[in-house]
Amino acid sequence: MNGQPNWSDYGQQPPQGAAGQGNLNFVSTSFDPGRAQAQPSYNTNYNNNTATTSFDDEPPLLEELGIDITSIFKKTGAVFSFGSTADGTYDSDLSGPIVFILGLGFSHMLSGKVLFGLIIGWTIITSLGMSWLVNLLVGPGGDIGMYACCSILGYCLVPQIVLSLAYLVIGKSVALSVIAVFAILWSTRVASRFVTVRLKAKHIPVEEQRSLLAYPWLLVFSMFALLSLY
Image (cartoon, rainbow, N blue to C red; front, side, top):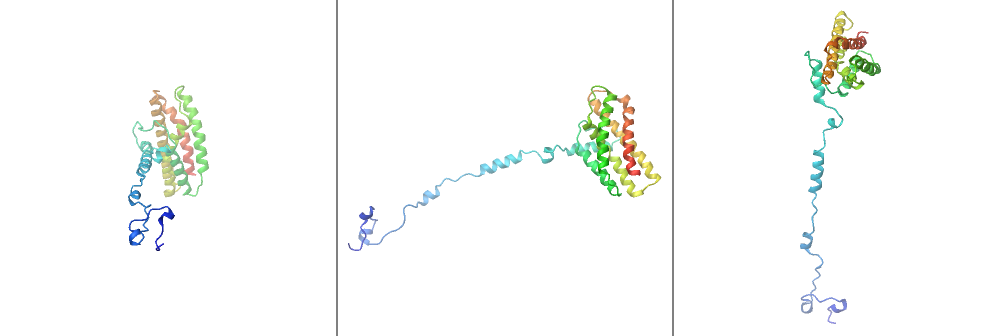
């Protein structure tokens, strides 16, 4: 009745100092700084570490696509090698051949010839024919399919790219015909060597039949050389 609130009407106990001093302390006791600091903190390092570990375990993109750069360089180096063996040519791939097929098409395009469809068509038909012919000559156990023949043909197109680039420099001349003969023999020798090494890996001796295997390859690369000569 003296102007002071009756705390019993509100169901609360009067604060300290309220009865005698008349000043009210309205500081809320529902907020506890210690409780706020004691809130559990969630560790996000686990998720970050898990994500980092999962990305580290992922193989490289080229490996996922089946592209082995080291093997491609080894096979390309074997084309320029004049030895009797061809290291790294036991397996077949289409990554390198696709690059060289497109390179041959672009080199012809520089001279005004758009021959991409013709080159790809000849590659597919030739791979089918050479697969049938090589297996027919070697007999059972050879098992050189279209995939392997297409891989061999693609890598052996490197001399044909050199020939098409020579056409841009010297044009139609006797020198270009000499380079064409050299490119045909170069591609034929490498292709027959690749087939021989692949069959040797399967314990099939074909050294005596190498000249017989080289003849159809000679016809194939002569056909590709005509694209640069005419």
